[in-house]
Length: 191
Image (cartoon, rainbow, N blue to C red; front, side, top):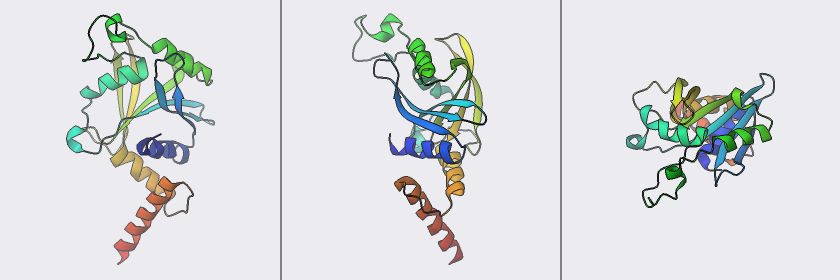
C-alpha cells in the first residue's frame, strides 16, 4: 500500500466508518489486485476503491481520460501493450478479467451487483473537486452502465480526513503527520 492508498484507507475507516481490506489479489487475475475494499456494517454498503494519484496538475486526468483506468481496474479490460503485438497478448485475445473480479468480490462476502465503485485521484481537471463527482460510466467491455464516484484526494479526501482527526495523537505515522500539519496550521493562524 502506497502513501495515497494509506490516506484513502484511513478516510474510509475514520470518515465513512468502514472496515477495510487492502491490496486484495484478484483470484486468477494475472497479477491484478484491488487497492481497497471497504464495508460499512450499519449501512451494509460495499465499496471497491482504486487510487490513482499524481500531484502534478498537468498530469491530472479529465473525466474522459479516466475511462481506461475504470475499464482495467473495475471491469477487467486488458491494456494494450505497445511493446508486443504478435497476437499473444490478453488485449489481442480480447481477454477480460471481469469474471475473476466478480468471483473475488464473492470470496470476501460482497455481492457483485451491490459493489459501489470509487476512483480517487489528485483532482479531475475542469471539475468541482470539493465534493464527490458521480457519473454513470458505460463500460464498452461489459456493455452496461455502472455508477462510479470520483473523489479528489487534494480537495475532498484530505480536508475531510484532517477535520476528522484534528490534532489527535494517532500512532499511525500518516495520521500523526496530518495531525502535526493541522496543529501547525492552527498555531500559525493564531500567531
